[in-house]
Every structure is written in structure tokens, then in C-alpha cells.
Length: 77
Image 1 (spheres, rainbow, N blue to C red):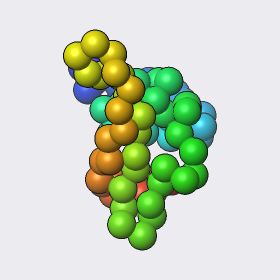
Image 2: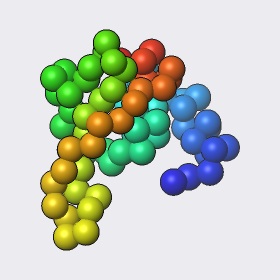
Image 3: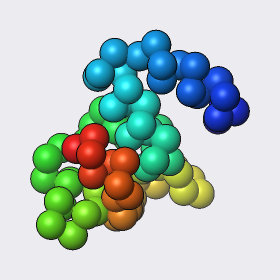
């Protein structure tokens, strides 16, 4: 993860899509592929959660993590 100063420099030059994409990666602590494979069915706006399929496990087993959305993620989605 880059230091916050570097991330802020990148966000200042990003277009709208890039800004939202980087925010989603950062606030979900997700990998690029995990964000790219999200579907609307994975987002529960009523309960403010997002279900991410991840292989961040021993042996690389695919599992589904349900994460709470913070205010930044709510505004991005």
C-alpha cells in the first residue's frame, strides 16, 4: 500500500471512474480483481454491506467476505 501522501497525489489526478475505483479498493482492503468482479447482487445498500469473493486464505481457497461500507463507500456506490 502506498503512503497516504502518494495516494492523495494519485486521487487528485484521477478521473471520476479512477477515483471511485481506487476508493473502493482502499476502503474494502480488496484486490483489483475482487473489485472488478463485484456484481450488484453483492451490494446490500439497505444493510450497507458488500460481499467480496477473495482468495486471501491459506491455500488460496475462494471465500466470500461480507464487509461493512463506510461513508466513503456508500457515496461511491
